[in-house]
Image (tube, rainbow, N blue to C red):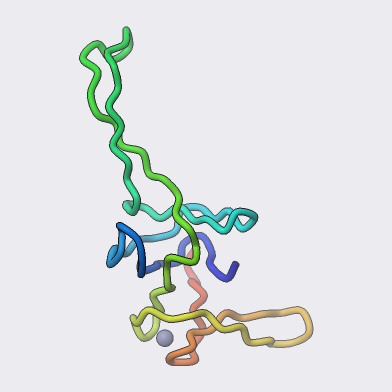
Length: 107
Ligand SMILES: [Zn+2]
């Protein structure tokens, strides 16, 4: 998986198509990412002692990493991520459109 926590992504397919958000969490083994504000499921809850009126709770669910493109922080375009080898062990992720690094220096 070439996506990392803190990346901003654009959803390109599925019911959340067109939405953008920041990655909160990545699960490389199952190829899923949790994107803030994308794929919010509303769940109706029955009244309980804690919450006597019941109501609707919102859960942010993960989506498939293959449904998104990275939004390049340099050129602001949705792009696939390329890898550039700096030396034998150091990899840098680059934007395939503008060829600039897409690493977030803050965080
Ligand atoms: Zn770019």
